[in-house]
Each structure stands twice: as C-alpha cells, then as structure tokens.
Length: 385
Image (cartoon, rainbow, N blue to C red; front, top):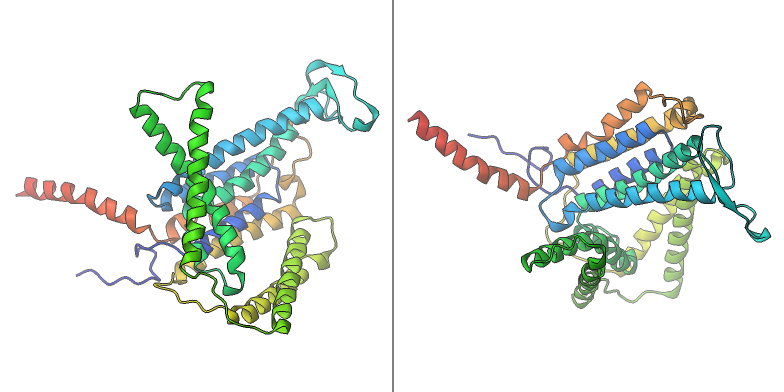
C-alpha cells in the first residue's frame, strides 16, 4: 500500500502557488541585473529554461517561454545594431569595419551614423543586450509556469482594481502565443504554410484580436461575477489606505533601486525596502476590510512554495555577493578576455534550478505520464506471464 502524500510533499501532483513562481522569477531577474558576464547570463537562461521544461503544465499559455526567448534574441540584435551604428563612443582598437560617417546636426551631438565599428563595442553591446534579454526571459518563465487567473485570486482585496488591469496584462502575452499556434495550425490545414514575409499581416491580425479579446472577456466575466464588490467606508479610512499603499509602493520602488544600483547610498537599499513593505502591508490590511471576498479551493502555501522562493532568493543573494566582492567576475572589464566564473556564482545558478526537483509536478503532466505508463506495464505483465 502506497503512503498517502500531502501538499507538503514535492511528489504530490498539484499546481504550485503562482505567487511562488513569480517571486522565484523576480529573484532570478534581480540576479541577472547584477552581472553582464555572458556566461553567468547564459547560466540563468539555461536554469530558467530547465525549470520551465520540468514543471510547466500542458496549458496553451505554458509554451510562452519560447516566444520570450525569441524576443530576447531580437533585443540583442537591436542592441548591437544601435551600438555599432549610432553610438559616438569609440571603444577598443580591434576594428571590424570602417563605415562612411554621415554628419549630424548639433542637437544630435551624442549620436553618429557610421564610422568605426570595433569588436570591443560589439561585445559590450552583446553583453548588455544579453543582460536585458535574460531579465525578460525570467518574466517569461513566470508566465509559462504560473496561471494569471490563479494569481488573481491571491491579490489582496484592496487592490482589486489593479488586479483586473494586471490580469488583462498578464494574460495577453500567453494568449498571444496560444492564438498564434492555433492560427498557424488552421492555416496549414487550409494549405497555407505562412512562411513568407507577406503573410505576417494575415497571421498577426487574428492573433492580436484573439489575444486582446480573451483578456477583455476575462475582465468582463470577473466584473459580472462581483469581483471587487466593496462596502461603505469613511472618507478618512479611504485616504489612510491610499496614503499607506502609495507610500509603501514608493518605498519599495526606492528600496529596489537602491539594491540594484550599487552607486547610491546604502540607506536607500534594505532599510527603505523594509519600510516600504511594512507601509504597503498596513495599507492592504486596512483597505481589505471594505472588500468581502470568498475563495473556493484556495491555493495552498506549503513547504514546496517556501523551498521554491528560497531557491530564487539564494540565487539572487549569491549573485549580489559576487557583484560586491568580485566585480571583475560580475562585470568583465575587457570584453575580449574570457570572463571569470566564480564558484559562488555556479552555486547560485544551481540554487536557481532546484525548483525543477522541489516543486510538485503539475496534475495534467502526472496524469499523462500515468496513462502512458499503463500500456507498458500491461505489456510487461503479459510477457512475464
């Protein structure tokens, strides 16, 4: 007889709390913001993709990570082109090509068109573009792993207006990918391959219309079911709630900026972030009293959620320590040299990949694997007989 598994067991098939996936992805993005080392950025991309492949469901929006990877490649290419063609800084001595330079007016003194293009400038642009692409792909990993509809159920009652806008924004990109797959399949069935550049408009219009329509329909369905229904509240209580929430969010923004930018004063980091979190939490508690909400089958927050969040925070802390103690490894000074990779950075990357094992498998993937395993088991029993 098999032992009974609970929600605390990583082997228990259930969807992980979407907030845990978003906190993990935000921590990975914070780690990527501290380094322009191409090897470290590729490590973060690799471990995010590994976790997505291991723990994504079979829903259509779960395949959005590939679209974010393509968007990252476009960002890198655009960054290199802008650096090579428009930048007025002549970095490096290894010249690739000397283009004819077009003179610009005085108001565009910081730009150029043409001129020398060096390997150093191209590699610096590649590193900076890869950093931005890695942060965007971390957001794509959260979109592929967490359902925006389930995340909305965990939004505090005081933020129901923001929650409606957020769910429309978060569901737009996954629905865009799902509609693109659906439209391409329909076009192939009608004998149109869609490989030519002229057919992009034929595919883009129904994709954009379908994705936006589904998001708006979701917001309308939420409103028709009474989402965000409020009770009467005094004017002073509303002003107190707005002041606490606004001040808390402002403090969190300033604190995050202080943590991500090493050149600012230290008191703008953790102290301001902690004060902002306390103010925002107080405002949400006070404002949540005017919104009565009930949840049917609320998502549990158990041991796997804590482990996933801890793995992301551990990865971010490791990269922050590398950036402060060994700046040459986090931000390589000379792009033509092989970048350094410290042991602590490797440990941080491994910590970020732990949710592939610690997070429970989605129920639909576990059910599909069980169905595929039954015929093989039956065949084995028949051969043994």
